[in-house]
Amino acid sequence: MPPDARPWFFVSYSHIDAHDSHVKTFCERLNAEVLSMVEDEGPKVGFSDLQLNVGDDWAPELRHALQETRTLVCLYSPHYFKSEFCGKEFKIFHDRIQKVFPHKEENGECSPLILPVLLVREEFINLHPSVRHIHYKGDFPREYLSEGLRQILQRPMRPPIGEDLSAKFIDYFATTLVRNAKQHPLEPGAVARFSAVDSAFHSGAVGGVAPAQDGADEPAVAQFVFVAGNRNELAELRAELGPYGAGRGGEWRPYDSEGEDVRTIAERAAGLQKLDSEVLPLTPDLVELLHKAEDKRRITALVVDPWSVQLQSYRELMRKFDDAQDLRASAVLVPWNEGDSETAVMSKQLEATLHDVFNNFIYNRPYYFRNRIPDADALTHELSIVYNLHLKRQMSARPAVGKKMLTMPTLGAKDEAASILRSGLAQGLRIPAAAGLAVSRQLLNPGVL
Image (cartoon, rainbow, N blue to C red):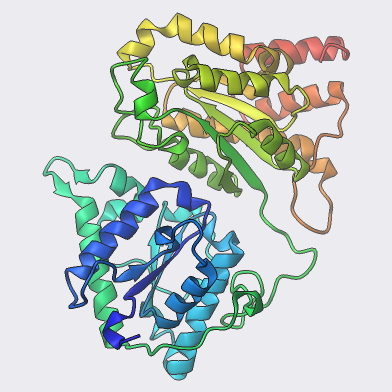
């Protein structure tokens, strides 16, 4: 391949994040910006496997791109450092740097060839030791550093002056990328087969980081399901479509069309509890996925848009969930925008549908049904309540040595009910009235629940 045809950048990202439309948007805009700065003939100056088509022999394509690329762009997210494949991509590129600049790399001087991007805010990301020497705080808009890339792509304009934050970020990032690539020219290098490469994030193969020992703690995981339709689906129900995105689920902004999306709020709540987070897709096999999550001893929170369950497809899927009464590590949370005039007018119908759809869940597990949550802070708080109740009731069953896992309840029903009530009150948490009645009923009659 001629030198001027080598990729200027390779985008490394977790495939869990591939479902986020903002990843594709960023790749496309970065490609266009870099193309405008270099002399290469288009249309592509960067590589991501988003551009591969179904049926492509992707492994050779990836290997070739990693052999040739001048820089590595890493999309940091809660999922990135858990991805073995991302760890392999990082290891391959890092080894290329070491071979060309062995002494400079030891001092971190060539880390500018690895350019991180915070997909979400920093506090949600548990950096692996092998990347902590790599600088990621440049002269970016303060909103990017505090909120992450996803947020500035969602609401690019800075009030009140109307500055385009996303354009400012991508211009600065592309300028930095091209400058660093020119200042530290990296020659192509041979790449081993992926099966023969250790993940930098799992084997301790980079920077002298020791591999994890058997029995070492691993972070517990909170899983989310975002039950929310997209803009086109909701158009048949309501006039105000600002809170809904082009995609389903995590793009929904429950409290303000210019505010945080529900995924960002949920990941913040998990981060505050020192939990990693994952998003389950809203698919017809949801109940099966939830059973698999429980087999792995994971908490799952369903965050439900009361408008979306008015649609038949969402309503039927939630009824299947409600019929699966053996699911014991799930919670249902319903954000409720009190300032939305359409929600105020339709309040009774929205409530009635929720109680119809989740009838069994509300009766059997009322303390895990959190309804009419009024704002983002309250949603963060309610999610924290759910996590704390699960963690506290399962603490006695967690192994003393080994993986840090959430085990299924082993307490008797009476003890469990009392534990839930005590743990909530001890923390000063708000216990829903229905939950209080259910717990009181259980204390008096253990056979009720």
